[in-house]
Length: 346
Image 1 (cartoon, rainbow, N blue to C red):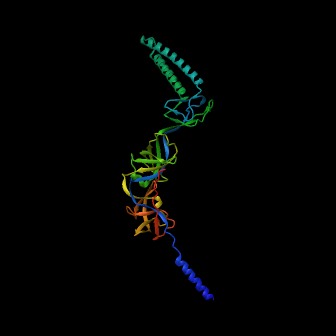
Image 2 (spheres, helix red, strand yellow; image 1 turned 60 degrees about the vertical axis):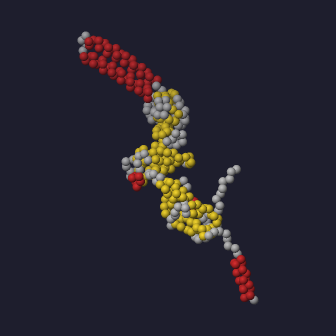
Image 3 (tube, rainbow, N blue to C red; image 1 turned 180 degrees about the vertical axis):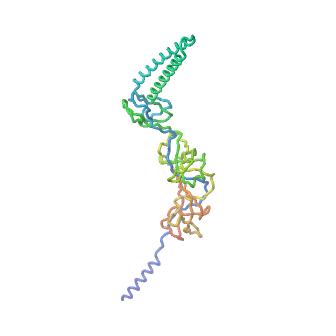
C-alpha cells in the first residue's frame, strides 16, 4: 500500500515538473560603446580665494566719530569708510602750522640779512633748519589725521560691519571684511608625479556645489617652486573668470586641468559597469538568431567625466552591453531588450 502511494506521488511530481513553464527572460536596457573626444585632464579639488580679500582695520587707536558704509555695500578705491575722533590731533596740527609761520618769518628775515652780511651764516642755517623742521611736523601731523580717516584700499564689496558708532578701537581692530569678487583665484594641490604635466597658461575648469550645472573657466597663473614637505604636493594657483560674482571666498571647488589636446576614446555610461574585488565588468550582449544572451566580461577603465567612463580595454567600438537590469543576470542566460523610450509631446 505504501509503495503504491509513493509511486503515485512520484508520477504527480514528474508531471508537474514537465508542465511547469520556465520564468521569462529578464528585461534589460542596452547601450553601445561609443567614440568621444576627450582631453587629457588631471582632476583634483581646491578652494576658491578672492584676488583681494582683507579685513579693514585701523592703524591708530581712537573713538569712532562717523561711519560712512553699510554692510554689503559696494565701494570704490579711496571711498571714505570710517572716521575716528580727531579733535586733539586737529588742535596739534593748528599749533604746528602756527610754528611753521613763525619759522617762515624768521627765515625770511635771516635771508634778507645774509644778503647784506648783517647776520652770520650759522644763524641763517639755523633759521632754515627750523623751517624745515616745522614743515616736517605739519606733514607728519597731517599724515596722522589722514590715518584716522579709513578708506577703501581697492574696489570691492564690504561684508558685515563689526563695529558701532562711538566705540573705542584699539590698533588693528577688525572693522569689516572687504572682498574684490572679480577676478577670483582657485588654489589647489597636486601630487609630485604630476609636476612635469603642469605649465603656466594651462586651462582649468571649475565646478562648485552651489552651481552644479555651471562651469567656470580659468588659467594657471602660478606654480610653487617647491613641494610641501609633509604631503610632497605642489601648490598651484589659477585665475578664474567670475563676471557674475557667483564664486565666493572659501568655496570648495572640483578642478579639471587640461594637459593635452582632445583625443578619441571609447566611453560607456557609468551605470553599465559593475565592480567587484577583481575589477570592473560588464554584461556584453550577443544575438543568436532571434534570441539575445549575455556574457560576463572583465574590462579596464580609465577616467570618469559627467556620468561617462573611459574604456581602456576589453571592448571595441559598437559593442552592445547591458545598461540597466543587472540584478537577475547570470553568464549565458537569455534576455529581452526593452524598447527605447520615445519622447512624446504633450
